[in-house]
Amino acid sequence: MVDRAPVTAHVPAAHATAAAALGQRPAWRFHILVEIANFAALRRHLGCPRADLLVADVAARLAGVAPQTRITAVGRNLIEIAVEGDAHAEIDTLLDDLTLAGEKPFDLDGEPHDLSLLFGAASARIDQANDVSIVEEAEAALIEARAVDRTVMHDVTPSSAREARLLAVELGRAIEQDELLMVYQPKIHVRRQEINSAEALVRWRHPERGMVLPNDFIPAAEQAQIIDRMTLWTIAQVIRDQRTLRAAGHDLRIFINISGQLLADAAFVCAACDLVAESDAKLGFEVTETSVIRDPSSAIANLQRFADIGVTIAIDDYGAGLSSLAYLKQLPARELKIDKLFVTQLTSSNRDPLIVRSTIDLAHALEMEVVAEGVETHAALALLAVMGCDMVQGFLISRPIALEALIVFLRDDSHHQVPQDSRASFSRLATVWKRA
Ligand code: C2E
Ligand code: CA
Ligand code: CA
Image (cartoon, rainbow, N blue to C red; front, side, top):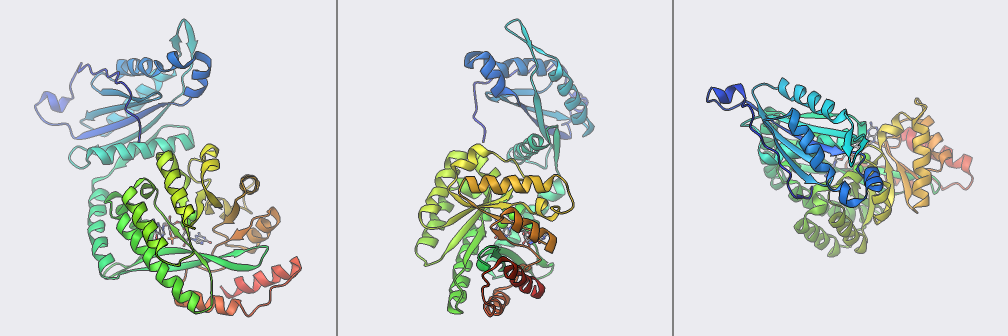
């Protein structure tokens, strides 16, 4: 969430939209976030008092090219523009005009300075998106804009919003009617040649749609705020499944995916801590870095609460979103999971091995273990082993499987002796992947 700083709003309603002139409501609404990307550098150069006025300079400049908009400064380096329009194409023209306006140097105390403005925007049909969804979509677009260093526009499409609502209602029922289940994907420790943890992934056995994968319902569950209930269900289920595993002689730490928005949800954090604390479970939580960046202080405090009750924290999808070393250092995380995007292309791209290598070194410097996810080939596994990657997970070793299948997998695995020398250890890993 952004801080609401003193408003430098500039709202001259110079001309209204054509629809408004005819007494009709315009069809579209747009929301644009403008960030001064080089704010920190400018502040060093200009000093804090002058830097704090920059946002007003930018707002005034942008108001000049976007007269019928509502422009608000919402932070030291962030401006929000809300506008309505008759046609979707208007947002493209507006973004072009704003970009052009921002490219001219700004006269700051008699000196010309280049400000680097970054735009994240969202559009929606006027009746089909509420204030929150369009603002959140624009925030998501800005996060993406930072990663790709150019303007990003998202559409809040009415059909997807409606579909998400529908799915969320059904999901509520699914939780009650036992339609959800957990599958497990083992992680292998490369040096120790052991499977000592697994990731739990949710599935929805839908009566009409068949098996629904999480990417098709987690975003809806997050949007409809039902993700807290669903995640508490997953934690309770994993605790039950872990007991079954232990009874079968397998002591594995099981990692659960926790959506970013839950890290700022005090009620969820309390309920999750209660569930874990009153069980004998050995759990881990996988969280993405972006979830921490949204509200760092409460996310870090809550992660610490989980860590204090023995939950291992892993940073998921590292490298896929905004990577911020500043936060990484502050997190009570013991594992770093390199996003599968880098791992699947490890042996076919020139750049990715460098990224993976430096990520492994960075994680080790921060005393974290590294997990490579998405290991699909022998070549990738061999390269990761040479690079010093601690753990691997992926289709090569095993797809995510039901609890019963995991027990069979682990039982067969325990028949193999742990070899001492590294060549033998490769051949042992081979026995695992050939079976998968
Ligand atoms: P994730 O946490 O990055 O999980 C890894 C995804 O990669 C899983 O997809 C897994 O099946 C897939 N995968 C594993 N090995 C390989 C491989 O070698 N190659 C490729 N190409 N893919 C591989 P899945 O199960 O469909 O889950 C997708 C995402 O949904 C997860 O991504 C996670 O973000 C989310 N998710 C899954 N279960 C839960 C849950 O219980 N709660 C929450 N909040 N999110 C969940
Ligand atoms: Ca994960
Ligand atoms: Ca992941």
